[in-house]
Length: 89
Ligand SMILES: [Zn+2]
Ligand SMILES: [Zn+2]
Image 1 (cartoon, rainbow, N blue to C red):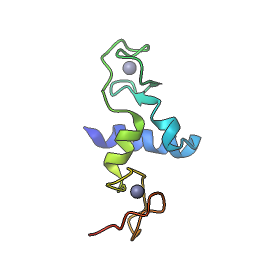
Image 2: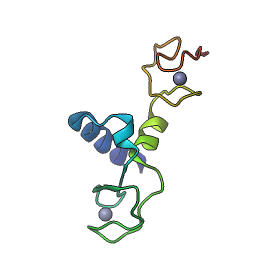
Image 3: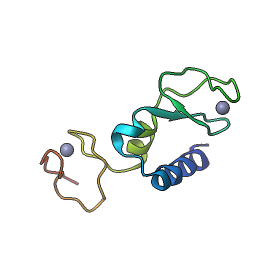
Image 4: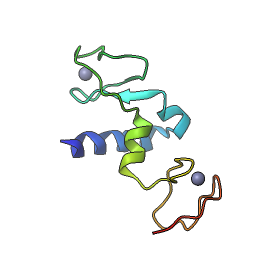
């Protein structure tokens, strides 16, 4: 259930160059995949309820991120470039 939905959105994010701060302002309808503001509870396109997670939270769940500051990192990072947190595996 999550895979198509997440993959579609992640491709869009990369295409549009959303950074973490932008991604926190948006979420995506899990029914019609419209990107909406996190302030909305109901999709303006299909009128179904929107998920609670923002795009950023979806992205962070799917990718490895710093446990301290939540910056999304590549899997081979040994420490967080944002806050300096040492990362253990
Ligand atoms: Zn919708
Ligand atoms: Zn960090």
